[in-house]
Length: 105
Image 1 (cartoon, one colour):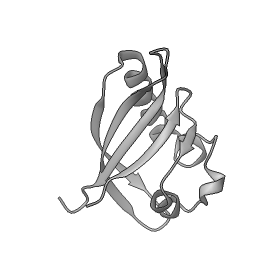
Image 2: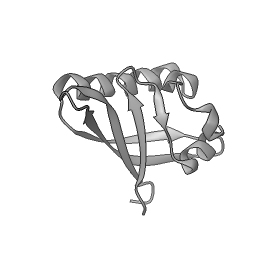
Image 3: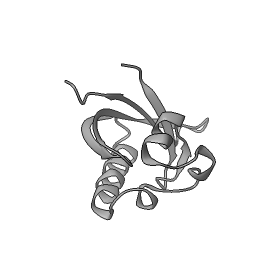
Image 4: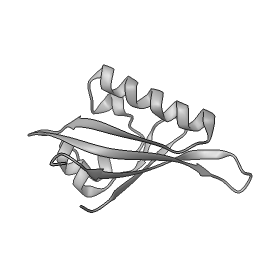
């Protein structure tokens, strides 16, 4: 299974998403920048994601979780690793996500 990477800002806005993810949730890559999970997922799922994002930003520690996501035609399970991204001043400037599909695991 190949890894997919995406980036978010410290305010949980999408910076970059892989084309496969965009296709899975039914949006074009050019439509994703500046949007949050609340634009694409139910409020409870988006809030759960935001809570995890905040935990990584506040702790400065990487977090790995297994998460179910719902696309336009199916659901999948992903192992998602959130890693803080630091700027030149040593402050967290965003998050890097690495994910791999574990649906068949």
